[in-house]
Image 1 (cartoon, one colour):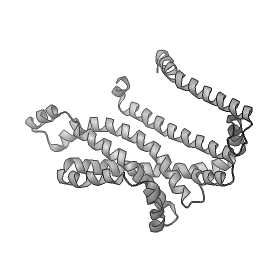
Image 2: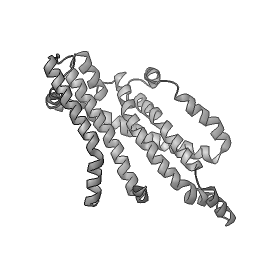
Image 3: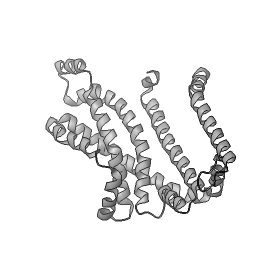
Length: 256
């Protein structure tokens, strides 16, 4: 990355960074000025102190959440792309499955989660199922729409040249689908964090969701907010990782 590109990125991020600094400064000023109790609304400095005091404890919980998040996201990536490909290749399957996919999003996952615990117990399985369900929809829909957005004139040209269906898929339909998949994967990666937390709230002994619930039950708002900051950082890291992988795999998109 050139110096000009780095400078451009810094300039683009400056307004958001300035707003965050302003909010934190005002937050610290307000809490100090009004003498708000720490258990009700801790100051940014209190949250930073909670990071230091709870570093070992959060380090015990974070790996479990990362494992559930990564495994569920990977399963949803494989499942979503497979379902989207089958739906694209077979019209009757698409007409049967697609309405069910859309309808599934009308059911809050917080309601489904207790049923998963009843069906699969308190182990890893219900957590993976929940994260997979949360992440599969954006991956499936974006990949399917990407496949359907292929250049029809290019497809007609390949057909006229006697290209096989696999060549049509590989050369014309797959490239735009991968670009769409990258966008869906970034959305799904942030959903994976939420799904992992919900799953851990319902019956786990380790994980950031467990740490968050225990902190709130003990009126440790500083620890709870520290955990929320960690969750945000995990989601942003996942988003940035997929963005970097996309730029590496599809370098031409960096200029779009």
